[in-house]
Amino acid sequence: MRMIVEEVMSRDVITLSPQDKIESALKLLNEHHIRHIPITDEEDQVVGIVSDRDIRDAAPSILAAEQNLDILESPLQSIMSSPVITAHPLDFIEDIASLFYDYEIACVPVTHANKLIGVVTEKDILYTLIQVTGIREQSSQIEIRVPNKIGTLPKIAQIISDRNTNISSVFLYPSKEDQSERVIVLRVQTMNPMPIIDELKKQGYHVIWPNLPGMSE
Amino acid sequence: MNAHKSAFVFSEAFLSYKFRDDHPFNQKRVVLTYDLLKASGALDDEQIIPPRMATDEEIKLIHKSNYIEAVQKASVGLLSSEQGMQYGIGTQDTPMFENMHEASAQLVGGTLTAVDAVMNGDYTHAVNIGGGLHHGFKGKASGFCIYNDAAIAIQYLREHYNLKVLYVDTDAHHGDGVQWAFYDDPNVCTFSIHETGRYLFPGTGNVNERGHNEGFGYSFNLPIDAFTEDDSFLEVYSKSLEEVTEYFRPDIIISQNGADAHAYDPLTHLCCSMKIFEEIPKLVHRLAHKYCNGKWVALGGGGYDIWRVVPRSWAQLWNIANLDGQTLQGPLPKEWLEKWQPKSPVQLPTHWQDLSRVYKEIPRKKEITEKNQLTLGKALEIIRNEQKYIL
Image (cartoon, rainbow over all chains, first blue to last red; front, side, top):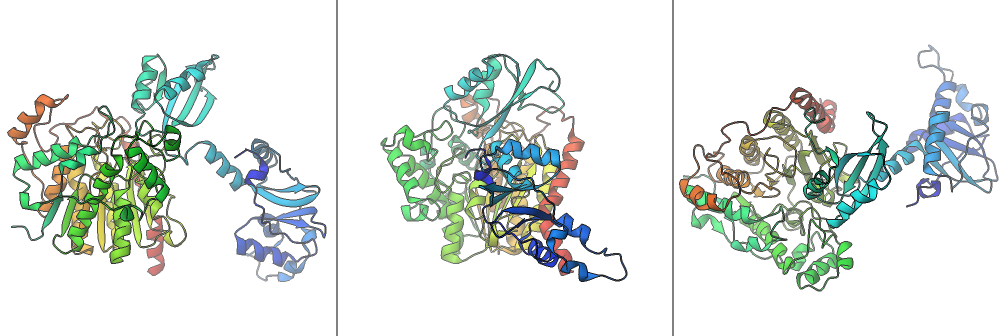
């Protein structure tokens, strides 16, 4: 799987037109357990987006003595957000994640040649990132603190491949304690990581896990 | 006199399931257990039934034909390492070995023999410590497991007897193969308590894995923290299993009794003692009598300290099945110690129970206990919510 939008987006998109009533949107949100509906015109161009929050903001307060339900008869164009932030099918997953973070949104319609072809939600992005951690493949986790130096990762990978063991995922992030160090998190496809850990230790690597909590370090 | 009859499935043929001399999965533990029971006078010859071989048709109850064919090829040295990789065969965990198909089919046959013994009405409980290979997938070997005897036995019970099966997995690793095999089946409830998959193989077994479609609400997971000790383990185990069994009301219980949650186990990070290996089967035994007319099939599983931990654990499992919930106490038979101490690389224990704490004090015991209690609450949420609506 490539980490791009067209690989993770949903293609079955529920849409409404700007003239549809708020009531129809409310019904669709509840029926399909979704939180966003792109609003499109006759040419499938995205002209707005409506979220469950937009509708809640427009709906009468549940605390009010008399409920004025006429509001639900209003057209969606009266409450929809416009213009809409959209994504391209070839956009990277990381970019969409930053987009969600920066704009505090949770869904973007995906357009190609000005037509709606899909949507990507926060949930799709989270799911993809979970895949990246390698958790969906049977594996054991090893964490190693290493100096931030060229050539460390291949040496560690070699120790693992020497033991005929596959690597499911690799993370590399700066150590909290010391900027001259990195933490490498590996998921390896074996139930018995002990021979690998012993070899890593023998070669002087600092294996943070497996270890006793509060006893090591 | 025993009110209930129990069968012990055993043959030296179980030893043929052997990957390598230095591989952690070592079926010598089955012989060590057998020998310990014999030396203790706890196992009569007439209680022993030899395992049959599983047929290809029976293995197909769970596994895919192309996978079985690959294992059969590997068995006679005709599978290339590239071909093997897609089936998880020829890895460090499950290397190829001569006659691996027959050796694996023998373990499955042992578990089916145990099931037959109970279902024919000849025995109330049956124990096959040669089985319990819970990581095997439909089309892939993994985690030392080739064929998933537990899953095959459950499907066998579904097809031949239409029973509701409760699967109880107390191995320190998540019982993933069995869980996924029945993830959408509401007639098979899988329960697994294990060290969290955060670090430990296979990584799954989170509380939110609850089943799919029709099977939603019939998969229970209790991922407990690394360094969990006896009291916390038993607290969450007992509460959850009692509630799950009451909720599901099974016709039969299949238990997988991996013995790798002990502090001595080299592959896991739990800090339990022999105590849990007495309390775990005692509860299963009691629940089998309460809900299933006693119908209980107990299997082995993981367990990598084959000298100090596994023989005592599995011998007590048999004792509980055989002695109506009782375990043996006091010193181990001299005869067994004298026979095996010269062959053991470690000092053998002298008593059935661990006499003193076998690990250093765990500094964060309180937090670990609290976290496990929270996990317990999450795991049982679904049952407790349902009960709220009934009331």
